Length: 618
Image (cartoon, rainbow, N blue to C red; front, side, top):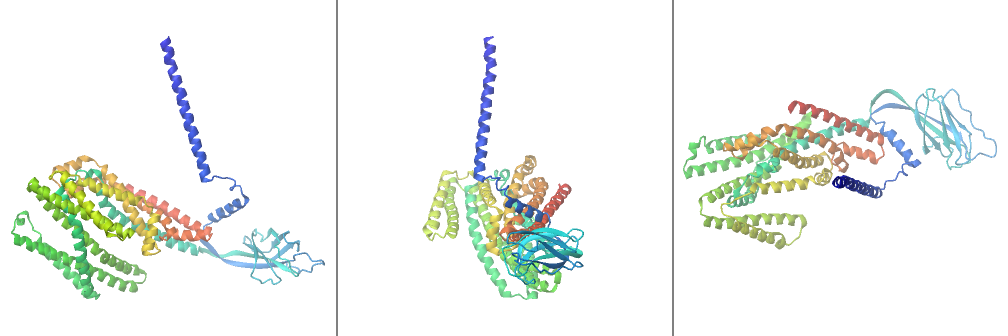
């Protein structure tokens, strides 16, 4: 019995302690919420303010009437005499003509601040307009006071109370009713046309940002996928020599491409010469690659002289390829300027050709630099791989010490150069030579502390760097990016395209990479077991599994970009947000309501379209 009694007490103690914990949690939550009330200044007294409520009602009613449709207006203006203050003698005011619109003021005089009744008769039914006080004795005076608005009923009658202002005068003054009525058929307002133009601009702004962002996010997503990068390992010799080849090749490639661009400029902007140069360059590239690339494996066993000849043909083909690209850029710009002025409403095609040609010409040196860097890095990496497989450990350790010191030192020096450019420190000892020495010491230590043939996790290093960059850029809002790009390219939708495009790259790269990480490992292992390289593994084992979710994410991102483009317009990024901000700043709430309605319609339409497309493609 005693044991049973003790056991029965335990649940009671546990229950009490659980109740105490719940009470403490509830009390702590209440304290946190109470402090939040103080920080956020929750105060409903402002809501009960009569002035606030009047403003809220006025703005709400304006938002409920979007400025989309209007009528032509017919205005009737009529003045009623009033005297401020009442004269000592009797007043002699003209009698109204009862057969036309007229006003009656009762009483027809009063002291400043008095409230009089204003009644209107014979006006147009269901018309509205302002009721104002006209100071002075001239009824045609354009200066008016007050903000009252009246509306007639179906019989053209209205009654309103009017407070007399502090405008005393010896003679007759006037109260004016300016009533307007709709005539003719309804038509779209200027706001509606502006809203249509900007909402179309918003949709295409988001579309271009999604297209360009997706194109760059896909390759980045493979570098940011842990399951693809973790198996990538290589010996220090290969990694260091490849790392060394990238910056050297990029610099050489950029300088060569700049010279090719200057040579292209010397050819001129004659349309037919540019067309001929493009055609000749394309033919030479085709012939060069045809004779430089062997048709079968047996043909690769050739002499050194033949290999040198083929390398020369490849170099020549690359030269004429980029010369053709520069000439194609000039050709497109020249043709675009011609078509833009001659195609009329379809002049946008010429504008597109000109801008596309400009993009080709501007990006060619950078593409060439990346291509040269990748080529030289790959070539040196193959040499390093061969060294690690054939050389003895003692010799390989010496090579590793040299190339690792040089590669890591140059990498740190390039980072220091970037810091110097950003912060303008002005002391190359701190920004160039110290990083070079520190990086060289780290590279030497790596070479001495690792085995000569040890496979290093190069893939995880690339994965970490890529993920870090994506996380850093994704933490910056598109609104801030738009501010930067507005400074770079000016106010307009182009800045919005760049801002949303950059944000799309980092956002989709993260979503894509997580999808790659969640693929089934079976097909991946099966393709790797056949001896496929990394590119073949991605093409045949990864891409078939990720196409449907990639399509879904891309469509969803377009929907997000449409909504985000309305926000970046507030800082000059183009789109309907810019127009919305203008109307809000001007207190034109009916115009702002039209823009908000257009945004809601487009977002709802995009959601419906994307759901249909996902259903058909996934």
